[in-house]
Amino acid sequence: MYHRYKIAFRFVVDSGFDSLSLCRMVSKRTLADNPNDMMLGSKGLLKKSEFIRIIIDALFSLGFNDVAALLEKNSGIPLHNSITKEFLELVNQGDWNKSIDALQGFELPDEKTVKFLLLEQNIYELCKMGNLTDAQGIFNDKILPLGVDRNLTNELALRALSGSNEATETVISRSEFVDKKLQKLFAPGFIIPKKRLEYLLEKALDLQRIYCRFHNVPDSDLSLYCDHHCHDHKIPSETVQTLEEHTDEVWYLEFSHNGKYLASASKDKSAIIWEIDSEGKFSRKQTLVGHEKPVVMVLWSPDDIQVITCGEEEVIRRWDAESGQCVHVYQRNGVGSVSCGWFHDGKGIIGAMADRRIYLWNLNGSEIEHEQEQREQKQSDVAMTNDGKWIVSMSRVREISFFNRETSTVDKVIEDDDTITSFTLSKDNKYMLNNLINQEINIWCIDVNEPYKYFEYSGHQRRRFIIRSCFGGYQENFVASGSEDAQVFIWHREELENPLGALKGHSRSVNCVSWNPIDIHMLASASDDATIRIWGLATSRMMT
Image (tube, rainbow, N blue to C red; front, side, top):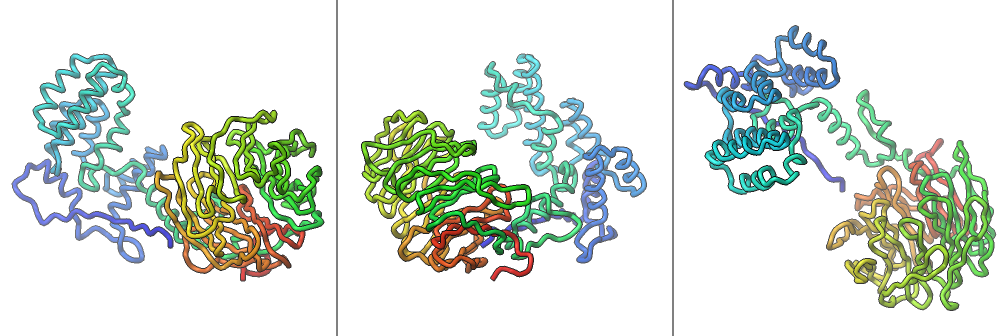
């Protein structure tokens, strides 16, 4: 389900005036509900005076000061009343004593805290100028008598009066001080948050984006001129090209990080690098030949200059993507490879081998010492996190371990519901997608000390083969998967309902899918029918 958001508006209602000073009465009346204030909007929810004030603020923030002043004059509605305006001017001038005196014009729920913040800003500025003597005097004579929380005074003394550089690093500009610290301590409407109109409009667009079930367009497509809603035709659903260069089953494929190339691995013992032209059409760039057995995997280096391929219980080869030449072969005492991966920085190779162990190599082929417990199962995907800290692998049939390279210990373990057949990490490494033998796909949140299952999906078929899934689309909000019934399934990442659609076109099992990381409307699928299908937006029909 989508995460729901609510916007709450606070209104201050005053029942009347008491014997407060005239200054307080003037300030209070500025915020009081005015029964004669015109209401705007089809639902009558917008007060005209509030609407005009945030427009004035928007004009000032955009640099249209003359226009803002003219609107204040012609409407008779100032951005701030005279008491608030005088107070803000005193703060911006750094006249802290008069700023504190001016607080008498307001009815503050926590005047003591406001005084503390004003004096704190004064102390930080003095410390930045090197005037520790005056800063200490203000602390002793004015801060301590306030009787505020001791934790606040202790922290201030530690940061500002200890002689360290922390005071210089902590001090903020006076305009930031008003926006980030003071404004929230005044009743709504006294000090209008900077760029309030911009915030409200952006929040409205964000909510439309959140509630859009099929949202899969760049942020630049959002507009204030119309309400936003994507239909299902914004999801790849129509075959735009079929690639038929392989002569046997296609087991794996992956888009390059820059989205300009696609690499595929096949049972025909080859891998192919495909190039995408400016019109989105694919053509074969290089065929990588050299393996003696089927190629189970092909992976792009972080800089997209090279690829590695993994032969089925054979060797791992590194290739130059431009020339198609093999530049190195990685093997271990005749032990065949099961899967492979790149180091996060492209400076090393990971090999999950048939002896159920994981080996690491430098690019030149020299082996890197690596002490990790032997895996329980032979089949194993392997990957390294973006920061290079963890090696992620399938350790036991239901478990995935996060091996810390610095401490040589397993920091985290994910235990899933059934045997894991493959996994993939999201680009930001916050989520993991696990394919299970029981025909389920589970998403785990892994960017925490204790990983937890986030969502689970079903609907596709997996009986005999390894089926691979992927994240993709706008902010990787979608999950796509192959299926043994020759279809490609797509789900929204945060919905537990049925798949958004099933894409038909292949004639045999779909083994692997890859979503273009740059063109969010492009998806590729690899099948046992020896073809690769490129899926794009529907031009003549909707998704089934």
